Amino acid sequence: MSEDKKNTQHSDEEKIRETREKFLKDYNKKRKVETPDGKVIEVDPMKDYFSQERPERKDPHKGVIEKFINWARSESIWVLGFGTGCGSIEIPPLTTPRFDMFRFGVAMRPTPRQSSAIIISGYLSVKTLKRAIRSYEQMMQPKFVLALGSCTINGGMYWDSYNTINRVDYYMPVDVYVAGCMPRPEALLAGFNQLKKRIREGRAEGANEYADNFDWYKANQKKIIKDWNMPDYNW
Amino acid sequence: MDLLTRVLFTLLGLFIILNWGLLMNAIMGKLTARVGRRIGIRWYQPWINLVKLYSNRNSINHGVMFQLGPVFRLLGGLGIILFMPLIYGSEFFSNFSFAGDLVVILYIKFFGMLGMALGAGEGGHPYSAIGVSRGLSQVTAVELPFALAIIALAVQYNTLSLSEMVAAQQGGVLNWTLFTNPVATLAALLSMLGIFMHSPFDLVKAPNEIPIGPPTEYHSSYLGVLRTNAAILHVAEAVLFMNLFFGGATSWGILIIKTFLIYFISVLVGVVFPRFRVEQSVSWFLKVPLIIGIIAIILIL
Image (cartoon, rainbow over the protein chains, first blue to last red):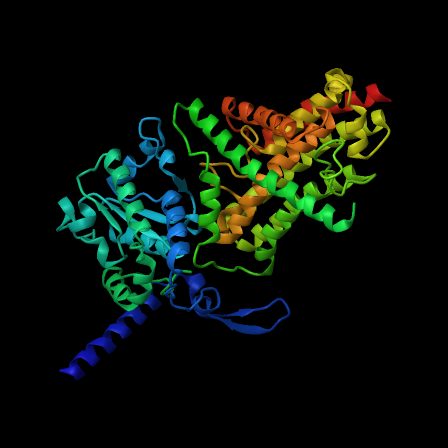
């Protein structure tokens, strides 16, 4: 039994390696290049340009300090401008006078490096899942995921689609779900307040969860994304 | 006054300016929000953002220059404060101003930008490079009329020391450069719009176009340093304009009111006008303010 398992695992790895060879872009493939002074050197962009390190668990501080910092984090949620599915149209109204998320300390950032939260705003197709993972992994710890709409919970009306995933929780640790199809911006604001409450209680440790269960998340992701042509962890 | 006391008072001045800068940014954000009929951010939001940024748990390094970029930028802000007389007549808040401080301040103002350009370049994001090239081309166009206005002032007051310029403007509103040399003031105020980089001259950070530009790759405490510097720099530049054209300040209250109003000019223009393209911006600076600057020089000779 255990040998069987080992064999399947082995073939899995083989498969992943094969797909990587197949789908890797030309400029990311291992190759020989000539330097300006005439030497021929071998470059492996996946190793040379990308870090091979795994994400690390970053333990929170203790006591009052962490409470204060968590309060600051909860009052300054910077959301990555990343739209998937129909929910992405529910986010822009938050910047308008009617909803005005800025009064809650929520702001949009255009780059994952500066964001602390990502909104998965609706169904996630396989192609977008890849981008969502890359964006999520590039964010700085601690990072929060807010999933919007029933598609992110169980697939919603796309539950038997050939091209969308059913449950975001398998691929990245979700902090708050906002149910509905489609939830209105008010519901999203309520979701933000729920997220704030969770951060203040010190329960929003999704990034650490991701680091601890990295292999499990990666296995799930690779099961869905057939054309895996990026490093395992996107720094 | 011995050196230690002077350093301590300079640091105290810096602390007040940092907090006033953060508060001013919040107030301006709030005002812009009210123009759009929103409620806007809380007045203490900038402090929370700083705490959050400095306490992020990890950060990515792209190389030595990437780390030095924010440091150079911060030096740009600190350098201006270091050599700027803040309160006229106060022995404590004259900082390290000396006979030629104006030249040093003009140099340092540009230095921070160059350091940031190198740091952002090492970040490797295409938007950084675009933002840097836009920023440097615009700043070059902005500096010309500003330098002309300052040369006109230097000839008028026959000095390159900010303290002496402020001293020459004392004794009533009509003694301000604003009234004694309105042409140079106009040239400098128009180029000030480019220095504060609010719309229509917000080419560098250009929201919705090359989102935030140079600091695209900056995060965590790097971004914290940049934001700290932004708060200091806004006040520092407003204080520079206050000293040059609006009679300086004799107390902190007057400094706060004057810097607020000076900064408010660029915010007011910003909420009214949409963004220029880079060639429009550069050619505008090389037309209107530059010609006014040349007239200011001709008039003073």
